[in-house]
Length: 248
Image 1 (cartoon, one colour):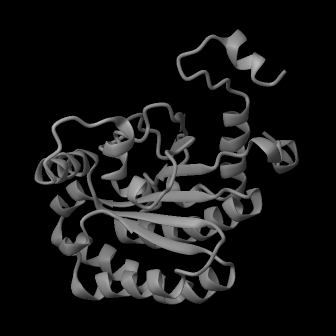
Image 2 (cartoon, rainbow, N blue to C red):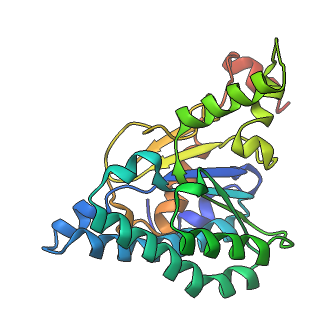
């Protein structure tokens, strides 16, 4: 698409909730003869650009898969760098996020994070708690399977013998925050899998896979993904004719 794709987006059909698997930092860096750390650092610029684009579009919620539970298995040096980069980025960006009305939220097992990173997140959450703009959700030390298991065990502890979808969803991280399931899931970097991300919540989410590495993904790329999303017909198990009747 051309650079004018923002003008082609229907503002009435913008996804309420976009989730992104930010992939390709390491490969982007290696292609330039740099260490993986360089890719992670450049990836923070893409985060800023995407937040700005989502705000322009009027997206209500943006969830970024920042660090998975499985990522703890990476080399210790890389994990330490990622945690420090998280702290630095939060400290550098929190003023601007607050000024723009962004509300920071986090899902995942925060107890596994280093104390400094955990405190920076809690401070950011508290500082932006009264904002009413874009909800920015960082998935950190997150695992979809672990989340489902925690929800099941929580319901067992509460004595539940039969559970419906509404009750179960309320035990999950996004449900507890009253955030709707993602309308659109974007994965950068060319891989076409969900990598244990929001397994329950993406049952009817539209997927958008792009070969673009995360450090090269910016405002225009997000607009292209949203435009592509708007060309689809979301049926939720119904027929196309039934969906069309909704707009008559």
